[in-house]
Each structure stands twice: as structure tokens, then as C-alpha cells.
Image (cartoon, rainbow, N blue to C red; front, side):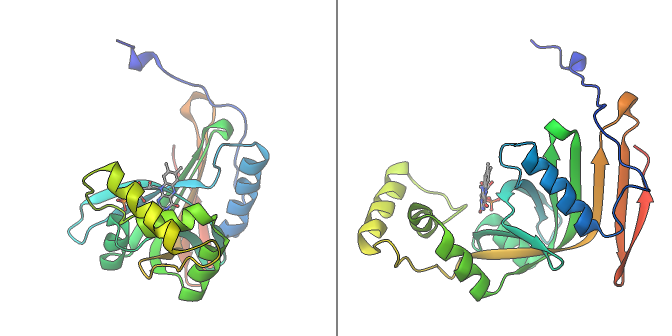
Length: 212
Ligand SMILES: Cc1cc2nc3c(=O)[nH]c(=O)nc-3n(C[C@H](O)[C@H](O)[C@H](O)COP(=O)(O)O)c2cc1C
């Protein structure tokens, strides 16, 4: 068996200091996101979404970030999925990016709210035809007897809704996460990593360095 204790990497590419970090965490996020795109990271917008049930049981999964601005970070999903039901009951959640090629991670804690129907319609209309049908065919997170049932449903819906006329299900749409906290982590030598945490206080953000 592989000796996992012997697996280790030294991080040394970059640094993040109090004088170089942006005053606004959205500006800092945009700069790091641009770096991730420029580095041609596979799916740079893939992020881990952590949610919790009302009684505090956590769950997590990967989703794709489809937009961000000063209002927050938006992804799209099925509102009846586990994450959709958990967020409806308990909007507290986190987003997490790990861009190993840049030795960086970003943690964002916040609260999620459903995007407007207009915003969900606009994004749904931009999706490829087969993804639109796929979203309609899948009762995400529910048990399904076989793959054949899913494929049959996909074929039936394809026959029913020609390209350009697929309706968005009311159970499918966006969530926007409004952040209350950000942490930007840059790997450094000897595990002396840089961590900059932003906490929201009213309309401003306070920045503190955290011990690695
Ligand atoms: C790279 C990647 C991107 C994904 N993007 C999404 C997404 O944007 N929306 C979504 O609902 N599921 C997405 N998924 C699937 C989810 O990880 C998850 O399996 C699904 O949403 C059901 O999660 P839940 O049962 O916890 O609600 C993605 C999975 C991967 C690996």
C-alpha cells in the first residue's frame, strides 16, 4: 500500500501580503479568478458547496460558479435536490475553491437566496439544448431504479420539446450566495502559508492575517 505519510508538497510559487491584498474581497476574488483562467486550470469555476440541514448535519458537492458581482456568487441547480432543500431550510453555506496549480484556496461563507425567475430564465435559455432537456429529465438527488428510466425520460422530453422551446422547470434555477466572510490562502514554504481573512462589518470589510 502507498505510504500516504510520505506524500508531501512544498509550496513556493507566490505570496499574499497585507500590502498587496485588495481592500475589497470581490476585487481580490476577481484578480485570483482571472489568474486561474489565465493558468488554464480545468474548470476554474468548479467550487465545493457546503450546506447543512436544520439539525446541523453537513453535506457537500461540486457546482459551477456561473456569475459573481458585488451582490454575490451564483450557481444553478435543482431546488428539490438535497442542496436545494437544505438551503431552503437553512441558508447558511460555504463555497470553496482549490486551485492546486496556483497553490491557492478561497473559502467564502455566506447565506444563499434563490435568484429571480428572470435571472434563472435568462441563464436556462443560454444552456445547450441537451443540458436543458437533461435538467428537465432529472429529479436530482432522488432514487431512480435504473439508468434506462432516465434515458427514456430524456428521449420522451426530446420528442416533446424541440430545440428553442424547452421550458424551465420551476424546480430548476439559481442560488446567489451573499458572503459574510472570505479567506484567501496562498501556499508558502515550510507550511508558513499566507491567510488573509475578510469579515463584513456593515458596508466595510476588515482584513486580518490568520496563522497558518
Ligand atoms: C465539476 C462538476 C460540476 C458540477 N456542477 C453542478 C452544477 O452547477 N449544478 C448542480 O446542480 N450540480 C452540479 N454538479 C453535480 C453535483 O456535484 C451533485 O452531484 C448534484 O448537484 C446533486 O447534489 P445534492 O444531492 O447534494 O443536491 C457538478 C459536479 C461536478 C463534478
